[in-house]
Length: 282
View (cartoon, one colour):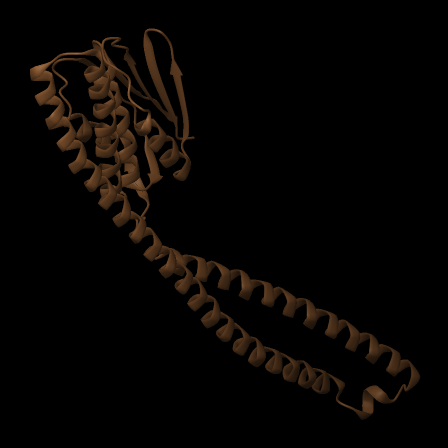
């Protein structure tokens, strides 16, 4: 079910329930007023009860009132429904177009930078063959970090579900096992401790989150990567290889924002020997 349809149905439900409650209160108040009027009129004119069929008159008044209210409420609900639905649909169409444009723009810029970086890397290789210098090494380091960031951005934007953000119950163990197949786990000791854990979220978002975390763990670890799935948390811990230069932190920034989008609490702990990330699904 589309997001705009969910919003529309929810608002309509609240609208109809509110009107129903108001009508019930109105009918109750009107009935009480009529009963009091009848009681007072009967005391003033004792033969009133015998000369007129008051119950039939009261029922007729209530029936006419209910009919008029029902007709006008029906018209009001239908008109409001159409106006609300088309307003929400129009707004979300514009938002989807902006998101698609943003996605295309970032992918185009990433592609352009990627081509330029390829040229720079090629020229750096030629320079390294002719001369080794600290300046060239520093340039190479910056270019490598920038190249990795562009790759991360491009991959993330290709995978992000901009149009259909469907949420479902996802088995975290299955996601982790599928992603671990993409990494070279033979060079590093991988400890996997799993307990059943399911999360109601967007599957692609979770895959991007865990892919970035696992990529960081395998890239910057020295000898081991420890993944522990608890009842409500996932803990990814690795030792630190000081010989590997650190990146710009773009992957972790993407993870933090996607966690916030999916209602996942993100924490990280950094020490001299270990880097630990905790995802709290509670």
